[in-house]
Length: 488
Image 1 (cartoon, rainbow, N blue to C red):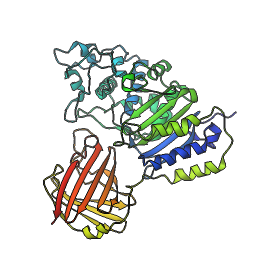
Image 2: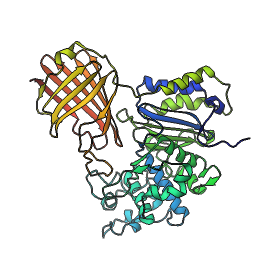
Image 3: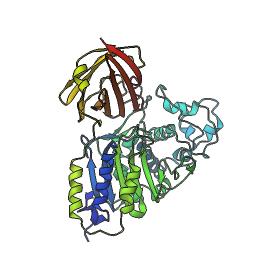
Image 4: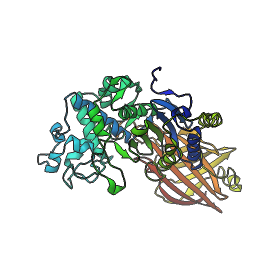
């Protein structure tokens, strides 16, 4: 029997024991519920059962992985341990003589690499904010609340400390350290990179930018106990511990936590990132479901993705190949080719459009600092113009479709937290009339930072009411609140 080459497309999902109809049902549900997914990959026995991307994303798109980055840092720690450069019981403060205070609290002095890997720091919350200049230092200066190694408390600063240790020992960014040992052998993208902290180290807690396949390949190494094809790339013992329950977190409704890796129901483990970046691994089924998304604002991470996956796909996977289903397989392939992020739902026309188009509204004082604005409609597209503290801005949008463009603000972070980019984030903007007098706008930020802005413009005679709400980490802050105004 010929050896199967990893990450090759199977002849059909059925050949791997997965019904094409199940995957099709999953994709239809994602669209029906308007869940903002960007890509998915279903891997079984090392072969791709199905893979698809919602336009404008593709298999080559570099995507922010948020806290999936933490799992990658864990693998870097595993490599360091295997090389004898680090141990689980090393006290993390010993690597930061330049950052610890003279009277370091005993809880922080006692904290070990293992404590931080399993999110059992002595802190009750993250130690840094976007305004701090040295995130690693904050970990040692913030007063702790309880002994380390005892209670699960999700703390991204723990990962910042871990990846900084890797970089201090290796003297290179943690992804670069992993290159020849792990990333290059699996074909991880050469141009993958990581956003930097204010002090200049990698933001391993949240900042990795890579492709969906890159994430899925690392997940496969973990599923396969550290192996890729016939090569043992990372210690099997470390992977076994990292992907096993090391600490209980059932009090917050979870199944446990390993080393920067979440336990998952049905015997699985997972890389998980904000906004539904996922690599769900199920060793008993030799199955991986990986996806990139932006579900921020739809509820907790995973909302709209996890339950549909379990309902529509997971529970229908069989141990043996299934009879071919040519009709469903053809429909699935057609659906995958037609995937696209959906625009704002609603009516594409309203009697109000002609009445208000191209007319300026003066706004009362408001939290957004917008002094005046107008909407101009032209067929199935429009322009939102407004003035705020940073000047005059325009944003093009579609009616019944998304229009790609650049969000107007230029004061947001780029490759390093704390440093304004001077550039505009890429976005997709759409709008629709949800009532005759009310236009809703939906803006997805689709850059190395992901976020969602929702706006309602409601018209009453010569008056306007506006409501803006955003879900985005550390940007779009100027676009939250209510405003009222009148025709100029």
